[in-house]
Image 1 (cartoon, rainbow, N blue to C red):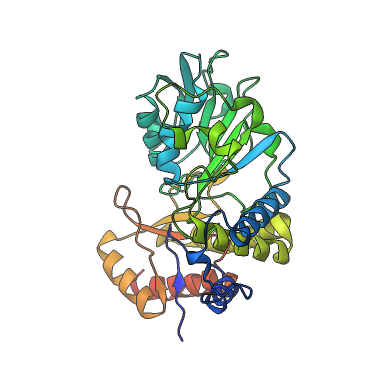
Image 2 (image 1 turned 120 degrees about the horizontal axis):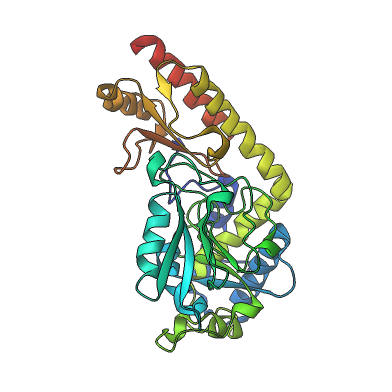
Length: 360
């Protein structure tokens, strides 16, 4: 069996040991005589799986008391609508920081449910940086302040937690959750699709402060009301059972690796290897400001765009796939989430050196 180095932005690579264990348990989970795919979500077997997954996630992120963990569906794009339906409450507006394509999608969706104040935007920089906190024009009476902590397409990441006063801070962490420790207590709500660092597509994680529950707009679908989801332990409707199971295996894998402090070191080493090469290259370049370069998604460009196709073809021939940049920005993008080994980044850098020597 030949495994490639998969640099996909998502669905992304999963740890091999997780895939192997899932394969071993596919037909018979722990002597139950069933696959997890076949289990009732209300049966004792699956309830045990879900409870363990939640407990592990709480342990890894040190989720404080007073927060609910929800297992939902619809991805981050779904949460772009579900979030304002639940959190606007009696407030007239919410504040959003615009740092790229995913922020823009969040803003566009939220405008359907209330007034959106774009309190800062990186558009003038071509979304290559994050606006300094002192430039944000926040509204003290906003329902919440929304950020995208890591822009998967543009490759900018917050390496700091914004202080927004008494207004709840909300973050789309789809592409950097579980990559490093996070102080959950500084956020009112964190959400993210699973298909980057957690597991297969279909599962969405929501971590929400108890005080923010119970304020959904009357038109909110029952299955999307955070309080109802919380009161029913994420079982109001059938949850994405197999994705929750795989997520639990990934949480165990992270814990065995040394938890989030160890994962942060692992990710920093990979990113440094790639960024250090880009800094010293006259042929490849990174468009993102140094102080907010993502450790998860590294966009880069070739000096001669006419060579893009040749670069991608050579990478694939060497077992490195999904390096083409998003269609909205072009170039290349290496997504190096938790499951990407250091060897994968080393192989990419070696190939980039070879390609530069030949074409530079």
